[in-house]
Length: 90
Image 1 (tube, rainbow, N blue to C red):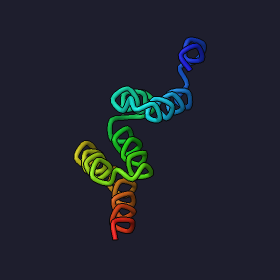
Image 2 (cartoon, helix red, strand yellow):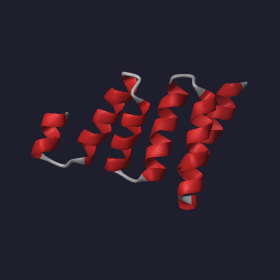
Image 3 (tube, helix red, strand yellow):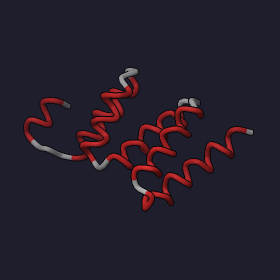
């Protein structure tokens, strides 16, 4: 991915790199790459979704809340993800 970024500053590459980093347990590096691919609110939402998929509901909720705090206009997507937590928590 790093070699690909040298050739092109492509958002998809940053997202793919972030996914690979998160799977390797490098959450803060993953977050930074998600941020480069979009913005801070989307980065919190993306990392939160990974936490949700991994069953880390508490960390997912924290991330979705940070997405909402960072950008209240991001409400719809983060809210949908919070609803997924509530649906899987029971």
